[in-house]
Length: 137
Image 1 (tube, rainbow, N blue to C red):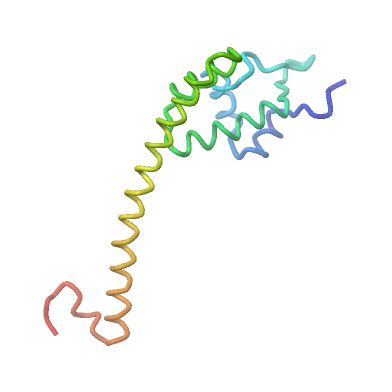
Image 2 (cartoon, rainbow, N blue to C red):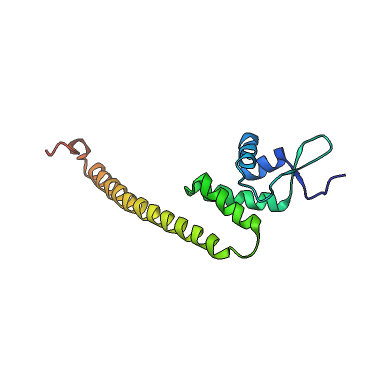
């Protein structure tokens, strides 16, 4: 009998939003904390709550642009256990800086877009939208 907390690959796909194919990819690439996902008597994958929690972290790291190789290295360090926390923190600091830089760039872009939206709205309110980018009135 299964531990009630273990989930099938389909259940994990549903909970995480990852496809079954992506879950297999994460496993193949060594991105999970478990070096090998347990299987039932029929050979079907069974995921623990820790696996699902870790997948949630991996999803956010990937969505924020962390390369697969870096996630793999981070997972390897976590699997090794205590003693390498400083190295893990450095990986996270590096990624944090990269994401903060991307957010700053996106905020700069958003400011320009907001300004352009205001300009267009003003022209529509004034009935002069036809003159946008033509220079005339």
